[in-house]
Image (cartoon, rainbow, N blue to C red; front, side, top):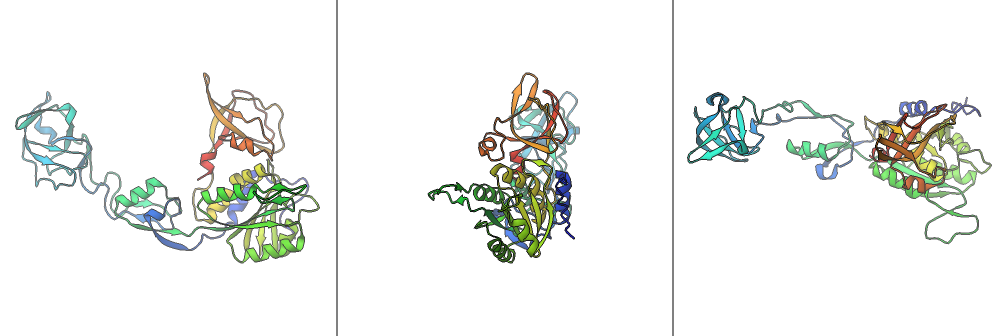
Length: 410
């Protein structure tokens, strides 16, 4: 029985298709331990617990003077200085009663001190300083206030960004367990395709998809194998797909999944494995397909450059990130006000290439003039995607979801 549900009128809703793909995502790749300076963008494979509290001791949040708040009257007063503590110094054994100590940002508070007065509020004199009244805890970073020893710093499945690497380094952690990059074999299909730099023959076009798709995949820290171009030949399709399935974690193709007589990929996939999904209620990108070649997942993207790139970003991205071991895989849409009318409802969900602009009435989203599925200039001139649900009309000023390309790039 064919499980793809490929009837002519059976277009999968986008969210349902993404959910089905996530249910079928393979286990993450093997783990490896890497130093922090090689871990940017990788996916954490194990929880990281704090080896010490953060901060590790009470310390000053300001350059100023440490004291006991109770040593000052309500109107402020003068306190003699008992010393000086800079970052990196050891604190005094205990702050003498009725004294203050000069202290700098990050320096440990001496025992007994419970507050810090910023230096700009103080009036230093010979041997002492006048300070305004303060409250216990003012400008003090308490030991363990950010996290306690043994607390979970980071969760398995998190993407390691600059902030996460800095947090790990601040705890003295020099290396982390991460998943090795998912290995993706990438193929374009069609006799009409020609490599950039070659001389075009009559009827040929340059292969844009290999370059745009590979760049997007590498931006997600995946390992990409550019496996070339498949000719429009059933036997060549089966042979190439069968070999690639033994060498890569996931296969991605562009083109060859529509209804033309030279679209051989679906039949090749069914001959080698199974076709699980075909055709989405999305514009552009309706011919998207998913299945397996042997035991290797296969994602079939449309051939038109915009449709291929958009389906990779919107539909394939959650599957690929989950297969990489990542927990959070769905992009966050931002509700904004439409700066355009959409008077005619469509049967498919629309992803309009668009940008944001500031108006006296607030931020508005404006679609690019070029919305064709082969018009990459519309993607280049846009900041993200305005999402219009199926069967919906829209008037200027009504709310619509916007997904930034920056969100989809990470």
